[in-house]
Amino acid sequence: MSKSNGSSLNGHSVESMYIETEENLSLAKTWSKDPDAYAHIYERLQPPESIRPLRILLIVPKGKKEDDSSQRALFLMAVGVLVSITPKQHHVEIADELFDDTLNYGGNYDLVGITTRTMNVNRAYEIADEFRKHGKKVVLGGVHVSFNYQEAKPHADCVVIGEAEHLWETLLQDVANGELKPFYNSRHFPPVLEAPTLDYQRIFNASKRGKVDTTKSIPIYLTRGCPHTCNFCVTPNFIGRLYRIQSAETVRQQIEDAKKAFFKHYGTNKKPWFMLTDENLGVNKKKLLEVLKVVKECNINYSTFISIHFLEDEETVRHLAESGCVMALVGFESVNQERLALYNKKGEVQKYSKIVEHCRKAGLNVQGNFLVNPELDDYHDMDATETFIKENHIMMPIYSLITPYPGTELYKEYKTKGLIVDEDWDKYTATNLVVRCTKFDPLEYQIKFTEHYLAFYSWKTIFKRVWNNPHKLINLVTSVMFRKNLQEQLEKIKAGKIRPVQSIQEAEAKNKIATSTTQKEGIKEEA
Image 1 (cartoon, rainbow, N blue to C red):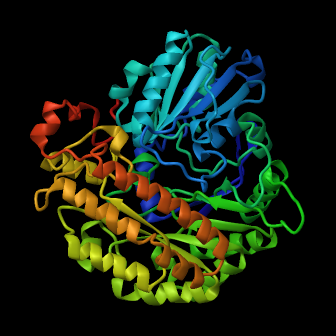
Image 2 (cartoon, rainbow, N blue to C red):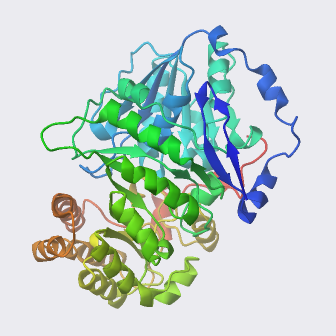
Image 3 (cartoon, rainbow, N blue to C red):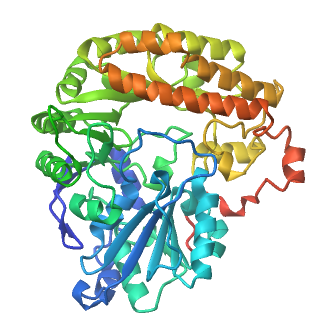
């Protein structure tokens, strides 16, 4: 059963589907069922036009060890949503360090908002500290600080915990009235049951990014959330297992708005490239096929994240390819069935090759994500993964060292067991060894991992993969970029510029192990 929502949020029309699954109904118990429970929030809100206009700067930091990528989307979705739902009288600017935007610390801003991920949070703290030195009000939000809000608070006037959609207007009103609170907790506000639409023209104006051709991707989402509970993923604990689908017509309008705002036509260049930022696109097949029919009519190319389960279905694969999907990022995680069970993944390894071959024949590139865990995987396991990738011509494989990000069930488990040996957040890029490695020399394991990763991007492998996949140009350009970054990483490791912590004792001696007081089972009420 589903409920259609045609509500309004800050003057923006919302038309979406909240899928009423058992998981969603169970999660909904987190919030109050009393219809008057949130009345005090809405009663306190003033009409937007009565609030003094604010100048707002939204910042995306670049992590100190984050590599360069030509395939990044034009803007971070979380920032795009905030720009879109900000009442119209406020002026909003975006500064994205991933695009080398300059930060104006002396700018005339009433509020500076900084979004965080674990790999960029140290840089976020530096930026926040500098803006506060210049007398600016700073709010920190995003995944990392939602689970480490006490760590974040010394760097900010305010920390937002969880999704910001239904608390943003309250926060801005408090800024305008000089009443900004130290914490805003999403669980004290109504649940976000809709997928807010994006104001692409306003995002374009705020980002000053300029129009783009087919070499840059425009972010969009069709759905929000994921009902699965993979223990290495932060989504279930950050936004819950609510699965929200935008209506087909809303998606059509969003695509056309995005084209008009961002896409530059020239010559035969007629298909813009979109990046779907959905956590898991294929959860509800019926609704997905309805939306894909409309996407096909919009004449675009796009890439997306999708579960391997849904690529088993030939009808789904056909509709994806026909609607313009050129690349599906799949979390294979492992080619060992026992490993999948440990990650709470339900894939069947023996089906993987057949699924990939069928996708390729349908015109759909498959990009694979694979995890390496020093407590589970030896060098033979690395060899097996390399063989699978080469034999199946997996497009632009992503090889990740297991990284227990704060907010995941894996972090809780590894923290309890004492398996985390390095909490230098700059290293949390999924290419650095941050967990205990007792079966192998940590430095040797780091080198072997990087060498295996680089082997996926040897010139011979790149050309063979390009030859055996559709959409050859994007495959070639991105593979060459991956190769360059990996070569630089390996050189730094061998030169001693990057080295894993050898033991817990070493980590403690260097004061790299943070106290666990900021990690929590849920979001504390006192926040």
